[in-house]
Length: 454
Image 1 (cartoon, helix red, strand yellow):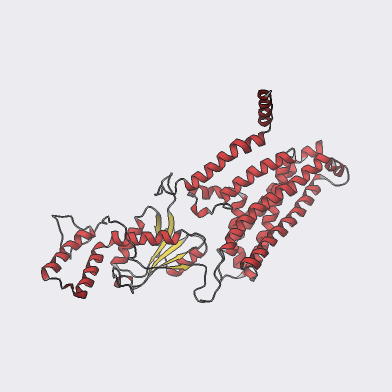
Image 2 (cartoon, one colour; image 1 turned 120 degrees about the vertical axis):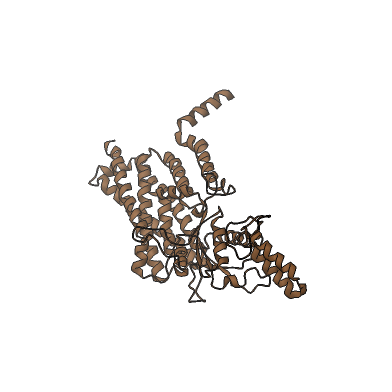
């Protein structure tokens, strides 16, 4: 009897392809996504199996041998993708190095997660154990919590690997000043060993201190040689009292978009299928209302519902968590993005309903599709830690475009931009979402012909 019950249950599960997918396929898909994201984080390097290198802009305002050596050492780090000037183009084959203002703007707009600024006078106190030197500025995007500690640690390693001769000389100078009283012979030996520490020569072939330099030696990492000053790229430097960006806005966008999709799938899609199961849909179509009007009516109602849902979430975030919603630039950008996002999500729910034959099937398929899109699009996991190819994959998801638009409004906005410039900034995302509305409704209309023929 038990064997018969087992066989019956297996046959039922095998016939229900959605339940079969939720049981066996979805866990493997999710495991694969998370494995791609986190599995290579400890691999290092920029290969296919390792974590992607962090893009960093470096600006050298010091223009000394020391700053140049540290920048080269940073560039040699596999964990960083360092650039000191824009990519060459036909119009500008030899672009000028980045300025501090350009670097800060690119970080603020989300093009790179951080910029490292070597200030003028940095080399004067480099290697001094007493401090007092110019700190290296790390202008960063605070939505990426690991970028400042990562760059800070690599700067300390670069200081030891790039300039051990300078560190030795500065240390002995301080020792001498404290009463060490080096003899002339000892001072001469220091000058002999400096090229060895720089990597200019090997034992037995020592060059004199005034000969040319080349090579980069290897040395263990050390902590505390370079003072790092972390600067939030989004906070206005001309206004010390300016309110910093709230990280809540970053996550409100991701969570809001994901739950909007679930609401629209169960609302817009579920209502159509429920009307079909009850026979209401057939009776409505027997009147003067055609399928096109019916779909547009459902789309409009649930788009308005989605607008109310997202608005409530962001108002709550503004009132309780201090998200900066009420400035004209943010309010207008939020309104435009919410209209486009809710419209596309409602149309997406109608497409799912047109594809499915029952509410149970809709529930299973929508869960699979929405969870996968949310994982790939950045609603669950910030995209800055994803491998490069998964960042490209996110562009094929609803979540990726909607999330990018909201982040441009609340996170990667330019406080000096006009309202028109702010709208132009989010135009690619709004345009894509509007195109999704048209495409989804068009596909839904074609699939809905089966209801007219039944």
